[in-house]
Amino acid sequence: MHKTETPRSADRAQLSFYVENLLAASQRSFDDEQQAQHLGRSIQVYDRNELAQFQAFWSSDRSDGGASARKLLQALEQRDPCWPCSPVPADSVLIELANRFPNFAPAVDHVRRAAALARLAPGGPLHLAPILLNGPPGIGKSAFARAFAATLQAPLLQFSMTQATASFGLGGLNAQYSNGGPGYLVRSLVERGAPDAVVVVDELDKAAVDANHNPTLPLYELLEASTAARYVDDGLQMPLNLSGLRWICTSNEVSLIAEPLLSRCMQFQVATPTPEQMRAITATVYRDIVAAGNWAAHFDPELPRAVAEELAESVPRDLTRVLRSALGAAALAGRSTIRVTDLPMQQQSARRRIGFA
Image 1 (cartoon, one colour):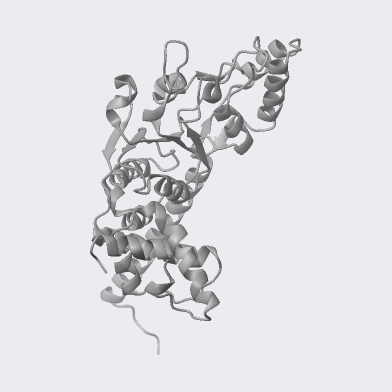
Image 2: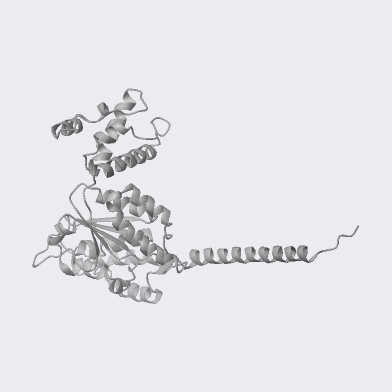
């Protein structure tokens, strides 16, 4: 018997056809967006015409600085002018970063806002205003910077101002000087091919600035997006677009930093973690150590509460050293669970001295 199609069944067929087409269009839109993100998420770092001009400029310079510049230009020539950027992290990943470093949550929130804007224009890079983290020593600023770079899937470059005596360490030195040549920043970036690397300037407040030397001078251009887009390293002379770099500066005393540098940064006062935050941080560090050592089959997945409580008055800087020592003690004893007695004696003694034992 032939089945007569009713108006209702015709409507269903039409609706099914409409939904299938809508889903197909949605998939095409998604694929196009993914392709746009893949193709578009890049930054043009240099201009080929300028590269040729500066190769000619340095070709006749026989100084050591000239040789260094030529070598760097050759390396630059091996890379396309447009360098691929790291992907914009998902918000859930940034929330996890804030959970791992609860005393850095305001700084992470700054990144979350920038990432939300970046997602509005698929394929664009994540632009971040420079971040200044100010707080007492040992509260995890360096550990946070490493985790931050890993979250952004970007290379990490570190520069300590306590060891810098002049601007050429970061920004290069003119070839007319015997030890001239491109600086650490440009050399590192060309080597890695990352236009949006995370650059950490440790202890900005400790920079030895005097009438003759100022190691922070390159930062006046690098921390400003408009000038960083045509940044000239003194040892290379060729302008490069470094506006995509993500900067994290750290300090212990913000009042010692020059106001023009402060005005270029989003400032965050990072407090010493509370005991409750330290318990969460300690548990996270424990899991990270076990995972990094490929020891998951040998130790408990979670840190015992008693050990986390014992370390609640510690500072983040000490945790990796202390927990690795405790894990070693447990391994020697053939145990998968670490105990309070596995902690280094000085750690236990310090807690007893302040009345927690």
